[in-house]
Length: 430
Image (tube, rainbow, N blue to C red; front, top):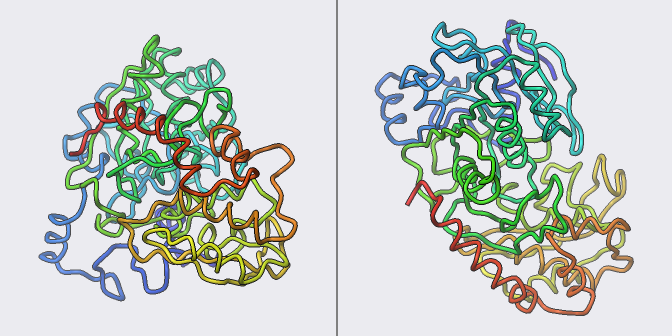
C-alpha cells in the first residue's frame, strides 16, 4: 500500500479499510470529498449517529479504568467516530494507564488471513507490547495477562453477528482467562452490523464445539458483543464468572443495519470489506465446509459462491426457491487466492433486495441444497468442517438425504426457540 507522506498509525489502522468500503464510500459518513465538514454539521451528525461504548467511556472520563493497569484486545476496527484508533487515544490520555495490546485472529493490524495471526511484537507508534491471543485460551491466556501486568482487560472489536466469526470467542476466552487470573473485563459495545431483531439458524451442539463455536448459541445470534458477554457470564461461565463491566452504546436500535448507525466501517478481517459482506456471511460461510469457493480472493467475498464448471442451472434452481429478501443471479469470477485460485468459476451472486426479510442462514442452506443437485463434483471437505460451522452433522446429513430448506430449518426450530428465550434476558437494547 502506498502510504501518504506523514500518515500516522491512525492512517494505517484507521484509514486502510476505507477503499474497501465500496465505491464512493466516505470513511466518515456525511463528509464531503475532502472530508471538510462545518462545526454545525459535525454536531448534527454526532446527535444523529450511534455512540459506541468507547465514546461513552471517554465521555465519563474513563472513570471505569481509574487506577488500573489496562490492556486492550482490539484490531483495526477499534476506532472513534472520527477514525482515530483507541490505542492512540488511550495512550495519549494521562487518565489511563495503558500497558499492553492484545491481537486476535488476523492480528492487531488485521493483516493475517483466516486461521492466522501476526504474532507478538511492539507497536511502533506507542511502544506498547503487542501480545498474540490467537490459539491461546484457559490458563495459557491467563498467564499472558499476568505476564503483561494488566489489572483490567478492555475488549473493543467490531463483530459481524455470526457464531463462527471468532472474535466473540476471543471475548469468551478472555473472560474465562481473566477470571482465572483475577483480572477485570470491560466490554465496549459496538453495533451488530446486520441488526439484532432475531436470532436465526441452528444452535451449536457441544460435541462440535471449537474456536468457531465454543458454546451453544444460534448461528446468527442477533446480539452485540456486550450482550454476548452478559450471556457468556450468566449461562456458560457461571461457575467462575468474569468480573465483567459492559459499556453500552446510545442510539442503537435492534432493527438498525450498519449503514444506519452513522459510524465508519472498517473491515474487521481481510475478507469482510463491507457491511453487505457481513449481511451474507452467516449463510455463505458454510461453503468453507465444501470444495466450492466462498468468494475469497474476489472483490465480493461471501456475496459470490462457485466453482469451476458450475453454470447457470445453480442460480436458476436457487432463485426458484423463492426465499424472501434475496435474488440469486448467475455469476462468474476468478479468485486470486484460496480455493480455485486463478480459475474461472461459475456460480451464484446473492442480491439482497430486502434486508429485513432476508435470512442469511436459510439462503446459505438453499445454496447448499441446490449446489448438491446442480454442481457436478460438489463435495464436503474431507474433515467435515461443515459440521463445525453448522454446529452439528445434521445439516450435512439432511442435505445429502435430499431434504429441502424448510425441512432442514424445521429440524433446528426447537433449539432456536430455546436460545431465543434464553437470549432475551441479556438484551441491552429494546
